Image 1: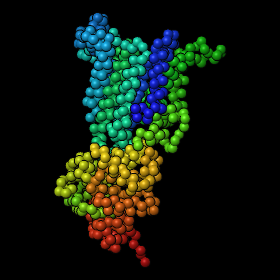
Image 2: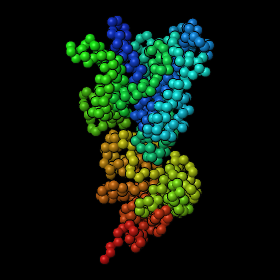
Image 3: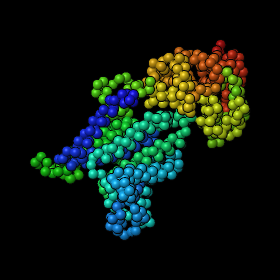
Image 4: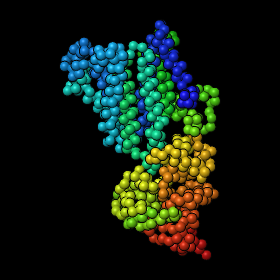
Length: 372
Length: 237
């Protein structure tokens, strides 16, 4: 209870948000676009926070997120395609997995089994991504700065090429898409899964490990002098970040109802990086707010720019594709004038509205209460 | 007791240290002075395991430290305050102190040491919730010293604590170093500010291009003509 009272200004808005989500789920007639934005925003929140853990809190500039998402998505999909659909999905190949985890478990325990199956396969998806992260961490994390970014970006591209390999087709279906697995029907599930995962990441950030990550980011030499094992903690951060990227990849598969390697291009990593930068490097709530704003802008609010029917007569400015031009300009303005992003490295809480800033560096605010 | 024998360190063919030997007895303040590039920081970094030695030995109470990873050296009771303060600017003062106790698991002991450090540096108590980056240079140095003490070391190695600080602040830091020493922590102090360092040192070594050129009690070196000429600015009448 003490925990609750201490963080009441953070917990209340979150509860209100979830109540809203439930309401939106129940009432009919909610605009389709709003639901799309919310679902995709929730999923991107998770991957943005996972990237923030690595890039923002540990200071490792990695661009492999799309690769780990792809691993998660394929793991989830290939383990869950319903057996009835397997022959249709794997048209040219014999599927390696003849079962579907969700089906097997729902056969044992009904709908509770199905939920368990989905949770289990999400965890497996995360573990597969984490395993690959563990493998490449050793050579890759010796690199610094830009070189690390190049290496991880390269890894993501290699994975994307490899997964379409003919030899892996019994699992990945080559370059054809995978479908026929359980997907999100409502709004609540993606919010719940993302929420739980982000909560876990926040716990990690506030633990001794999190402090070690931040210490490494602030000053590697000093961190080492304090006895913090650099290699171990960097790898840990990398593996944890990839684990959650894998889960969000699986969620993206559930959202899209199909998986294809071409979705997970490096452009996706850049989108996530943008969200992290817009939200504020080193702010979890910033990443969440950033991802909803980003998705809403790119998918919804700027749509009218693509529609030539809205043109002022005589000025044929609006046309398909013009949205992306405006969007790019907005991002440039953002990066030029709001360099620290929406939240900087602070976290959202209600005290934001009551007192604008207390002392220097708002991050200290909430910590003042937690520390003593 | 810290014993260093014939320590040699190379940086890719360049001799940083060519065979230095020195002793840091328990409960004393030993200082090492020398100009830029003499190898002072290298000595300290080699002892703490950040730099690999080519040959020689570093023994703490007879136990060889060379080749141990840095966390083992720290567990052996030898902590360092790195050059240029290097506090974690985004962590609060309290979190910085806690990060110094990273390898410790005794919660009560950690709390006790935090209180001790607050009593040494009252300003840190006042500012415990501030991000360390917002402190002044002197306060950051105090925090760096406090953080070094948080591992409850038997030997504290300080690398140029006077760097970039106003003379009055430097005096404050040095009197606290003496105070820490009185509480039983052995000090190995590395300084360019030879005048200040020699005044508080029980024993001192002068390092020149990787070799020890002069050694003796601190007060004796203050009067040594060679030291005066090289580091203190001799009055030429």
